[in-house]
Image 1 (spheres, rainbow, N blue to C red):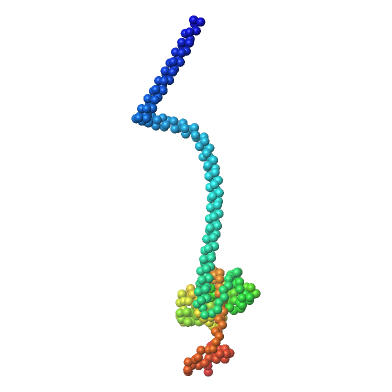
Image 2: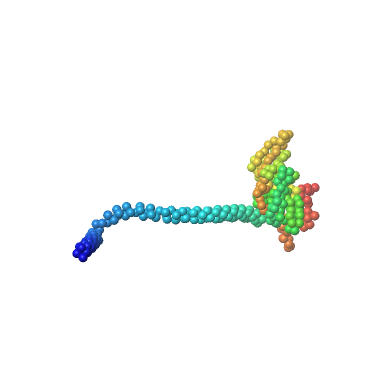
Length: 311
C-alpha cells in the first residue's frame, strides 16, 4: 500500500502539465489571432504558404481533371464532327439553291428581253421553250415544246432576244422542229444595214459562223457591218438582226469577195424563243383618203406583185 501513492501523484502531475501546456498553446493562438486581425502581420506568411501548398492541390486534382478533359474532348470532337457534317450539308444545299436562283435569274432576264422584243414588234409572237437540240456538223436543229396544238406552222421564223435563229421545218401535234440559220442547208436573204446591199447568208455547219459568198468586189462591205433580214422571199420580215461581219477575203477565182459573219442570236445559249406570226388586220371601215391620192385595191389579188414593173 505504501508503494501505490507515488504512482497516482505522478499521473496527476503529468495531466496537470498537459493541461497547462494546452492552455499556453491556446493563449498563444489567441494572441497571434488578435495580432493578425489587428495588423495583418501574417498575410505574407499565408501567401507564401498558399504558394507552397497550391501545387499539392493541383497534383491531387490532376487525375480528375485529366479524366474530365478527356470526356470533354471526346464529346466535343463528336459534336464538332456532327456539326461539321451538318454545315457541309447546309452549304451544299445553299450552293444548289444559289445556282438554281442564278439560273432562274438568267432565265428571267432572257424572258424579259423576249417580252421587250414582243412589245416592240408590230407582229404577233408566241413563246416556246427548247426541249432538245441537235448540233452535229451536218444538221443544226432544235425541238420546241409547241406544235400543231398551238397553231404552229411550217415556215414560221424563230428568233430570240438578239436576232433570227431559224425557221420551223416540221410540226408535230405537241412539238415542232426548227432549222437554225447555221445549218449547212439553210440560206437567208440579208442586207448590209449600213449600205443596203442585199445578199444571201448561208449556214456553214459551225454554230458561230455564217458565210456570204459571191459578194461583188466593188461592194461596200466592212468588218463589223451588221446584217439584217432583207424581207425578200417573204419568209423573214425585214429588219431583224441576223449577224455581224467578222472577216472578208477573196474567193478562189479572185472575182468575188467572201465574208464570214457571226450570228446575232445566241444559238447555243437561248432556252426560250419567239415564233413570229402576222397580226390580224384591225376590223372597221377604212380611213378616208385625202383628195388626189390613189386608192389601193382592197383585194390582195388585185394588187401588183412586189418587184413587178408597170409598162
